[in-house]
Amino acid sequence: MKNIVNLLFKANILKDIPRSGYHFLGAGKESVAEHSFSVSFIAFVMSKMEPDVDALKLIAMCLVHDLPEAKTGDLNYVQKKYVTADENKAVEDITRNLPFGSSLADLINEFNAGRSLEAKLAHDADQLAFILDLKALSDIGYDPPKKWLPFALKRLKTKTGQTLAQTIMKTEWDAWWLDNYVDRPIINK
Image (cartoon, rainbow, N blue to C red; front, side, top):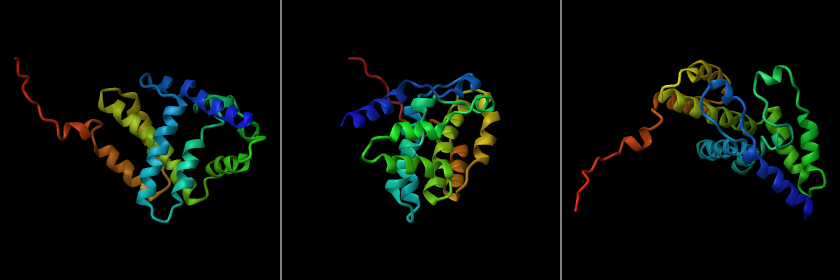
């Protein structure tokens, strides 16, 4: 039981590990745990759009895809040019002595291999979470996200991911609540 509880503490620390790429944007911030929630929710939506996908596997894969960052931290694209994290060792250390460790490691390894439909959709969910953030920052007036969006859009691998991204790019970040906004006068009593 202690190993399982330690796993929970490792996952919990992701709330305190910032995603490091936002420093280069000059705007926005997000923890690894916040990112994992967004990615997992996008995967849930994608699982409803893709009838042949193993939904539980896809969502679980997205939930744990960045778990190794509890050990390695979040390395952005600049840092990865100079620092190589030993993610395999991190996965091995995290999953060792867990009764379900091999299934956890399998999900992370499958995500990294990127060959299965679930892994491709998970990869796209990961990118779509970033695209949503970039689009929202761009919509409120930040210019750097406009430079990054084309790169994130090119990384999409599935038709579902590409279709969602096209619609994201055509939709204002606040349209979901402004479309039905009714300005009611305040009545003073």
